[in-house]
Length: 196
Image 1 (cartoon, helix red, strand yellow):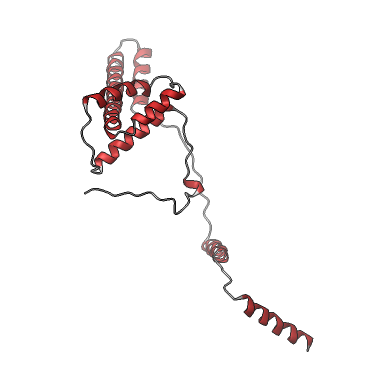
Image 2 (spheres, rainbow, N blue to C red):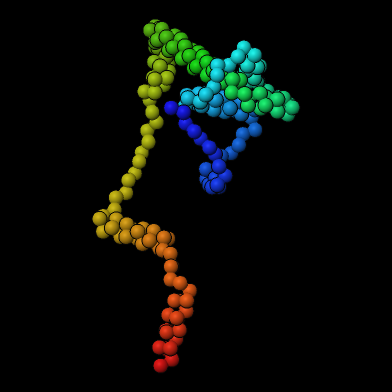
């Protein structure tokens, strides 16, 4: 089921929703590629990338982790990423690269833990204890001791705090809807009563 999204400028973006823009070319490439992948998942009508688009995506992929290119090159990259095929191919390459990085880290972690397991069988107790300690740290077995102090209030203090908070909230939402003419007549009536 295609999702039809039509952005408008009818309502301004709230200040707290505005995010800090990045100047990193790598982050911009990743954002555009991820957007294309998301649109494809939402059944956007994208055709499969052509061989030419794939080659251009490979060129852009080399920039993802490289140094920022010149301003002219950035403009060329932005113009190229307007084509959905290039952005989609780039998203696939970035996704595959990220998965490979994660797999490599998992493999290195397994190698390190296996080596530590071997070292924990060492005849020297210092080496064995240190190896077991490192295995424990890698497995998150040891955590720092944290002390949390909770101060309890009695029910009367809690009720009073709740009443005070409700009063503050009600005052925040109070809107005076009395028309100005009615206010003036009320103030004139009050003034005549004082004169008597």
